Amino acid sequence: MKTTLIIFVFMLVTNIINGEDPYRFFNWNVTYGDIYPLGVKQQGILINGQFPGPQIDSVTNDNIIVSIYNSLDEPFLMTWNGIQQRRNSWQDGVYGTNCPIPPGQNFTYILQFKDQIGSFFYFPSLAFHRAAGGYGGITISSRPMIPVPFPPPAGDYTILAGDWFKQNHTDLKAILDGGHDLPFPDGLLINGLGSNGYTFNVDQGKTYRFRISNVGLTTSINFRIQGHKMLLVEVEGTHTLQNTYSSLDIHLGQSYSVLVTADQPPQNYYIVVSTRFTSQVLTATSFLRYSNSPGTFPAPPPGGPTIQIDWSLNQARSVRQNLTASGPRPNPQGSYHYGMVNFTRTIRLANSAPVINGKQRYAVNSVSFMPADTPLKIADYFKISGVFSLGSIPDSPTGGGGYLQTSVMAADFRGFAEIVFENSEDTVQSWHIDGHFFFVVGMDGGQWSAASRTRYNLRDGISRSTVQVYPKSWTALYVPLDNVGMWNVRSQNWARQYLGQQFYLRVYSPVNSWRDEYPIPKNAITNACGQATGRKTRPL
Image 1 (cartoon, rainbow, N blue to C red):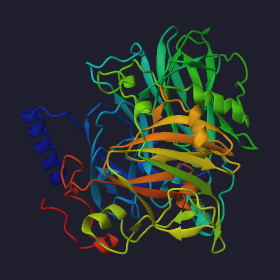
Image 2 (image 1 turned 135 degrees about the vertical axis):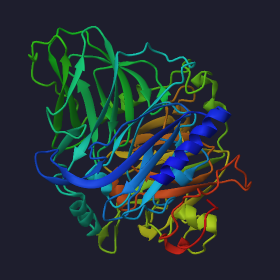
Image 3 (image 1 turned 180 degrees about the vertical axis):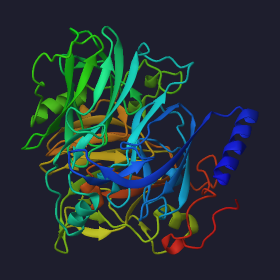
Image 4 (image 1 turned 60 degrees about the horizontal axis):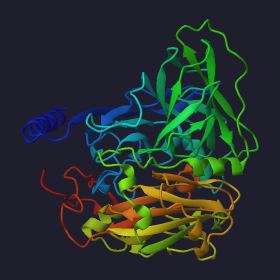
């Protein structure tokens, strides 16, 4: 506590003297606790006794100081889905960049939400902890002088929805470690509760913002509000064309922001989440309650799409960038003409599901990721040989069988990559790239080829950090490689990620300068960190 107080006073004084961006401080105690989300007692991961965890509400460029005390009996890491960590992959909170927080110890994440707005979430990244909870919402509001392309809503609600299992995360982890797939989920949660467990209160005639994230493990979801239209306004930090939808597909790890006007007769209405592309459809409901409602419902909960892929693909193509709206800065989002930039490299990434040594694994370009004994970023900094090799994953599919490797791909700082995700499997994939945003320029069925570029959207493709790839289909991105660091490229299906469908992209600058990358944090954990154990960072 004394150390935290000293840090607080120092940063407060520095902030006042230098006129820096504001600081927001959070002290979190991570514990196990009993939870009953589907009516069955489970061991959950709580933050300050809460599930879901506390929400981080912030403004563009805020400095976010999160002090985490690990009261679990095993190491722990927290990652920040969609937060770009500009020049600072040290704070990314995945095992490739950070040594875990040992049991009974503290680590302070020092984040800045630099040049970002929008809706995101955080979650535990280690040891399949994500299946036990520990997640929470992040909102980043625009600075007061930056115009927002819609009037201020009367209220702002966060919805964290996704699939859930009744088994403890340790049991699910054991299934995966044994080389088997997870069973089908037992249900869906909305803000940590099962059906009819949560109510959102509204006043008739007013408009509200709903930020919806899919925090589940294995399934895409569809979101809808009975009798109400949704005006899409933002996706993962980008203001969108304001199209109206009756329901939205939200894939694993994705976040959407909609405006909903309470313009219906005063009643209670169902908010519905259901699984997509599954043979068995799971559904969860919560309530939209008008303040002057007599307590009645107009009808049963509305049904939604189930296995229709073309419907979802067409909807995805309609989600586009609002070129005239300001983003985190006052200049219009469309002032960056990504379609006029020549890409310096094409990277093709194909997912697969090989059996290796008799166990189910998942792979990218035939390589199934194996964590090293030392975080890759730490090993890179201390120049520890033998931990990883650049080029240990090819940048196009090999067509060969799967094999295990600590896979790291090299990339040049300020490059501009065309990345094509190719999915030959029968299931929807969801991919995330840490540390970067990208422009979705195309998605379609069949095999990608150079001729597919003629169908690219080079004008107003949506900019985001997580994207879906439909079965037997491809999705193409343009990615500015403008953030030096060691960045995780991963499946957002957490079982597939855990069993190897991920790798690291090392974006490298030869210039040893704070202009390109921050130095290793003074508080970086190295006292129990593989081959980095005992090495010093910088003087405190």
